[in-house]
Image (cartoon, rainbow, N blue to C red; front, side):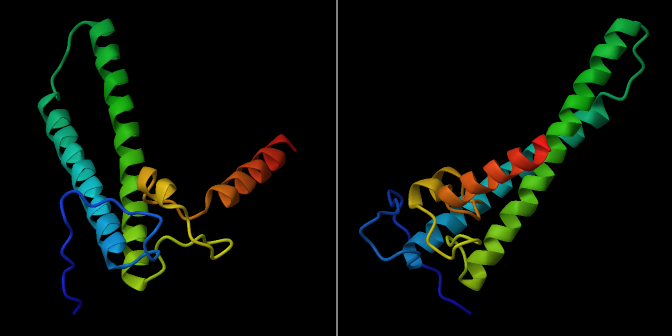
Length: 140
């Protein structure tokens, strides 16, 4: 089993250090775990809220408004569920030593991109190419 890496509280990945060294890997691992914990906490809160709201509302307009709010909340939770799956995939890539590298080119993904979107699997250039292809095929 791998020994836990000490990570200073003020650590931020820098371009002048080796890419995906132990500190960077640990930084992104912790960032992903914290994000996942936040999403799961929000999900639990939503479930509790939905359980508490199961009541009969006599006014049709109020009932419709509450149903709309519930539907929106459930869609948000579904997006969160998909995001948790992407976070789990990123954590797997960290464990396998593949995190931080573009799936298309194999080149390192910029640290700024990873810091902004830690679940990124494509470099910025590869992502832009992918989105252009999607737009072209969508317009067909």
